[in-house]
Image (cartoon, rainbow, N blue to C red; front, side):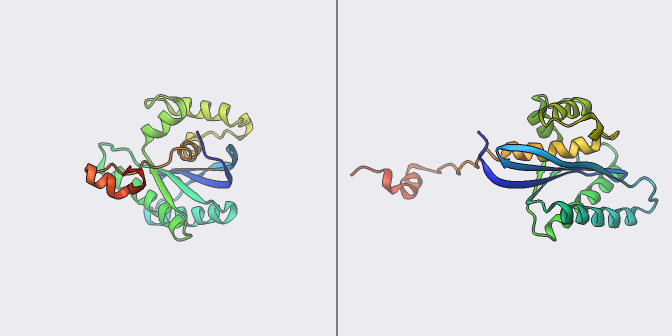
Length: 189
């Protein structure tokens, strides 16, 4: 069960070096609603270092506009092309730093976990994720952009929202002695 909150704003990011998706989800009580979703289009920028600067500035701008409480970011999947992975990791790192510079906590989610949380299938396509989010969050067709990166980012935010109802499990006890030491009130004398 999702724990109600007065209000929480979650920024989701799908990192990319050509197209970076973002989505902002506002949670009031237990009801999520989309504030915005879109992409940062970096295809016209040829210099990889200037792309990183642009990512930082745009993420800072989104943070200033929507004042998110938390950032949920998709973890890069492990591909065969090392250079692509390095570039993607840099883009992700810059987005994370933009959030951390504003004291926004960051949570990273594997693509499989995001897909599983939204569709129930870790192998779901981007189209299936987008369609499910569209239906669950009542997103009009006019707001669904041409790039799936925006809905992937919104998926990270929605996955994070779903995790709000799952408190962290306490660490297991190493022995009966450890249990007794941590729970003296449960011992009958």
